[in-house]
Amino acid sequence: MLCMGIDAGGSTLRVGVFSENLECLHQEEFQETANPSIIGFEKVGRLLRSSVLETLQKASLEPAEVHCIGAGMAGAAQAAEWLKKEFASLFPQSRITVAPDYEIALIGAHGKRYGILILSGTGSSACGINGSGESAHSGGWGYLIGDEGGGYWLGLQTLKSAANAADGFEEKTELYQKIFEHLNIFHPDDLISWTYNPETTNRKIAQISELVLAVASSGDPVASKIVESGAQHLFQLYLNLVDRLNFIDPPVMFAGGLLNSETLLQQLLMKKIGLKDAPCPKYSPVAGAALMAQMS
Image 1 (tube, helix red, strand yellow):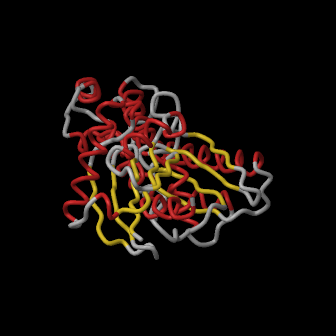
Image 2 (cartoon, rainbow, N blue to C red):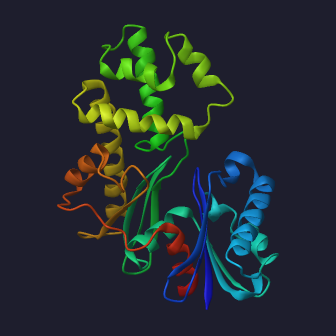
């Protein structure tokens, strides 16, 4: 039985075809957002259809060979029926299951519908499912009103710190010098044109997180303060879920590029939670989407 998993994250779309034992037979990755809040439902629909068909073509498969589909997408909870109809038009005989992107990440990481998952990629969020099957999520408000501790937020705080340093509100540390090198600009006023340029995407701002994490690791006080603040926010998301779901020492997994590698953000969050070893996810979110479909 073949199953398709779809992980429509904030900045990357992944589509994979899996066997019954979750062996990945073929996977494609598209560097585009499939968040309808950002690009609209019409564009998301076209993107999903084209990416799914391209993946099938490269895997030498027909839609009729796919028995079940699991899809995780930002905003799926508010657009579940729309998302199902989009896939039903291509796969009328397939069983279709949709969920928020954070839920497929949790299922994939733990290999089951249980535990807590904390995510820090372009954005940030956390979700949990307890032994009674009750679920809850915290964070995930998007880049305009939340996502503290995510890559975009870390990048934005770095830009703000540079502006503050230029105005004399903060010390001009190594981070101040490095941000100009990173953006290839030479004057503080250039921060305005770079930041508000229509070509400056959320992804470009999120990529600044790599810089602030690296500089913080070398002891820069301004960078360290930014990263510490991000880690504290992610820890608060964890505490919210423990309280709301009545957890006692729940298993915890991490997701997203900023927590799935040895970054200072990961180390600080592990210390706050009390984890001795970095969590090692069982499956990827896209495989988690396929597993969700199998379990439904």
